[in-house]
Each structure stands twice: as structure tokens, then as C-alpha cells.
Image (tube, rainbow, N blue to C red; front, side, top):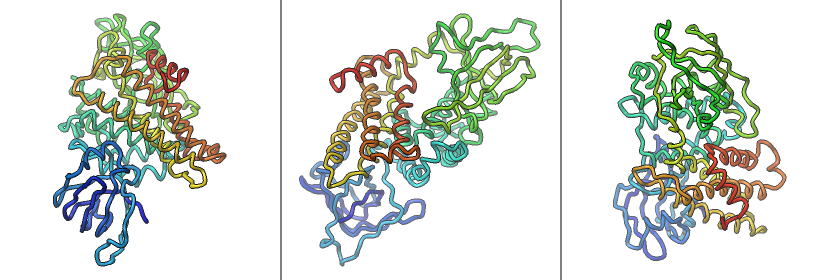
Amino acid sequence: MQEIAGLAEIGALFTCTTTECICSEITLSLYRNRLIFRLPFFRVSPASFESWERSAHQPGASWLIGQRFRLMGKPVVSTIDSTKLSNNRSCQFLDMCSPVSPLTPQNPVLSDVVCLLQDTIAPQATALDSEPDALRDAFYQLGQAGLLGLKVPQEWGGREWTPINIDHYTEQVARYSGALAFLQTQHQSAAGALAKSDNQELKELYLRSATRGDIGLGVGFSHLRRSHQPPVTATALAEGSPVNGYRVSGTVPWITGYSTFQHFILGAQLQDGSALFALIPFRSSDNPDGGLLHISDPMQLAAMQSTQTVAATFTDYTIPSRLIIDIKPPNWIHTRDRLNPLSHSFFALGCARAGLDVLESAQNPQIPAISNAFQTLNRQLEDCRSATYSARSGDTPQPLGPDRLELRAEAIDLAVRCAHAAVTASRGSANYRQHPAQRIYREALAFTVFGQTTNLMTATLDRIANGLNA
């Protein structure tokens, strides 16, 4: 008995009944010029399918010659009946990978992404968590694969993916490396903001390079949520000044990617409450236009230390108009938070799946509690994923509401509980810093507070205090 998962080109008719799905004569399938597998005959049981798979395998469903059939994550092909193999040929499996779910017309492009993550990123997850050089190299690998401009229009070299595809991508990267997921999303946000700018000169200089990964862009504007006590303020320079622009002072408390990114987008509050956004070189400097910028040493963080998070202090720093990306209205960031309360949920969902990957691998027939925990948590995670993707499926962002906050809090709760289960099943070895369960548990803590608002803190604490009844 063997288990398989992967990507196949169907060479004959694939049909389903109420009890099983049967495919005969699958032909050779290539992915990036490599043999994936050859399987003369196999059958699968829909009882082992997840919800999205069951909907695609209703009785009578079939796929004609040449169509693709995708399997995800945990192998859903549960058994191979060797007595049914035509001509007694054995199965061959080489370079297997399991593309992303769900099976929808929107997501075929993500198959290659998951194979990249499984083949290249997952084996070095421990190094990516602790070694800045390894993380930087992985970031550039995403650039070489064309995955650093997902929000950028194609005319500027980007992918211009739909939000739902970006959500799936984010979840998958977080599953295999929380540090890489956290780092690359800073760049995606910065590149997306630059793409929307009216500053054509700035876009010509930097945007295509950013989508290729030739340069990295960070962000430093989460502090704009503190509008009553802004850490960084900007004032327009007086008419007749040598430079047309703004003078900035204050400290950005949190910018990620110091050893990887060459520039970052600064957010500073103007006197009327508007937010100024400008592209700033990511290095300490005496500004030739006036003022100083000091970058701190990387902070000592419990999770994702390799991301090289620093603070940046501006002292009467002059920003010329040519570096201005945009000026947003007062309370812009709070409005964005209300319209996109679930945008950070996919980091937690990916982290939860990573915890279940460890838990599943720890299953032991002598300890049924591990399998029971896996089945229960897996069911809860799939329910949460389904609800989250359904809530995000509309074309227009929906306003903040209790249901969406509770859904986000549920994703956070699942990330922590799945990671805790992975630690528990791994026993004492999980206390080693380089153990996968240890890393995933620390990532769950980081994703708990990632993009946190006061309303989300309240919803998260309510769920912690009241358990699953919250």
C-alpha cells in the first residue's frame, strides 16, 4: 500500500461513482522537464476527500483526455490496488509535489508555486528562520520565479493577480516558511503602493526592478494607527526653500528587511491628519538635502529574527517632492483596516496547516490521541478556511463586522492550537530551537499580533477567555 499526491496529465477518462473514483492509463507527466509519476491504474475513495474535493468529485463527474487533476497537501489517493495494475507494471514516483487547493479556474498558476515552495523553500525552513543571508537568497528566488510583483500591473512587469489568488499564495508561503511569508509581504505591499502612485518618474526608476526582485522594498507605516500620538510627523517646507518637499522628524518603530531591502516606504502624519508616503533609502545617512536618518541595530525578536527588523529615526530629514509616492486622507489606515479585516488571516491559516503537517507526521498507532487531535483540528481548520475564503470572495471589500473579526480571531486561535499540538506530539524534542514545531509555535505568536487593531485584540482575547464558545 502506498500514498501519492501530485500533478498528473490525464491520459484517459477519469470517472466517479458513489464509492470511488477510478482512472486508467495515466500517461507520463512532466513538470519543468521532470517526470512526476507513471501510474497505470489507481482508485481513490471520496470519503478521504476534503470539502472542496468532494464538490469536484460528485457521482458522474469526469475529466476528459488532456485535462488536469489536482491533489493537495495530505495525499488523497489512499490506496493502490496492486492486483489491478495493468500488465503487472509497478508505479514510479519521482519529484512529487502537491499543488494548491481549491480546484477552481482561478488557481492553475499556483501549482508551480507550491512545487517551488515544497522543492526549494520547505527544506531550508529552519535556516530561513535564523539566517538573514539564507532568507535573502530565498527572497531573490521568489523574484526569479516572477513572484514579487503580484499586485503590480502586467505593463510594469507584475503578475496582477486577483486578491483571492494572492490570499492562496500567502497561505502557502506561510505554511512552509513564516519568515519568508512575513518578509515578502512587506515587499508586495510596497510594490503595490508604488504601482498605484501618480509619480511616473519614481515608477520608471524602481517598479520594474522591484517586480524582478533586483531591489527589495520595505514598509514603515503601521505606526500611522497611532494617529493621536503620531511617532513620525511631516511638515511642508516653506516657499522659497532650496528644496520643494517636506521635513520629517520622529521614529518609525518597526521596519522589516534591513539586510534584504534597499528602500522602504515611509508613512508620516501631516498637520491636518493626512498621511504622507515617500520612498526612502534604507540606510543610515546624512541627507544631502538636509537632516539625518539613523537605522538601529536589528531587534532581538522571539520569532523570525532573520527578517532583520529595525527602527528608523529621522531628524529634520528633508524629503524632496520627487520621492513622494502619495498623500492619503486622515484616518486612511483605519479605513483600510475596517475594509480588509481578513487580509492577515491567511498567514495564520498557513501557520495552522504547518502545525498540522508536523502533527500528521507524528501519528503513531500506539498513541491514537495524536490521530484524533489531527482529525479534529484538520476539520476545524478546513471549516475556518472555507468561511474565510467565502467572506473574501466578493470583488468589493466588505466593512468590518463582528462576524469577520470573530473569523480572524478563529484563524489566530487555530494557528496557536495547531502549533501547540505539534509541540505536544513532538515531546521534548520540540524544545530544541531548530525543531519545526518550535519554529511554527513562535510563528503562531508573531501572526497573532500581525496587523493587530484594538478591535481584533478584543476579539482574540474574548476567544481565548471563552474558548470555542466565543
